Length: 57
Image 1 (tube, rainbow, N blue to C red):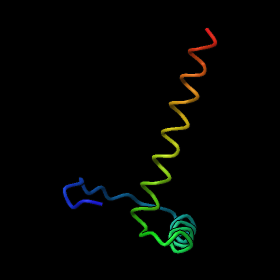
Image 2 (cartoon, rainbow, N blue to C red; image 1 turned 90 degrees about the vertical axis):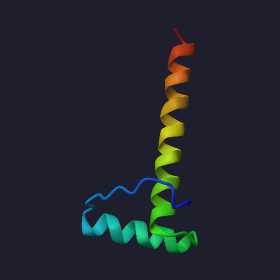
Image 3 (cartoon, rainbow, N blue to C red; image 1 turned 60 degrees about the horizontal axis):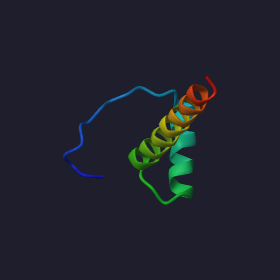
């Protein structure tokens, strides 16, 4: 991830952070990269669901 990206601080429950750290390790990514990847997947799924909903109208 480029250092030109904006930094955002968030608070996470301890259990969620630990889970994310475990997943990041499993996937050989940093915590930041893991969070970004998961947010991008979620955004993509939401956009696709929205487009499917519009196609059904």
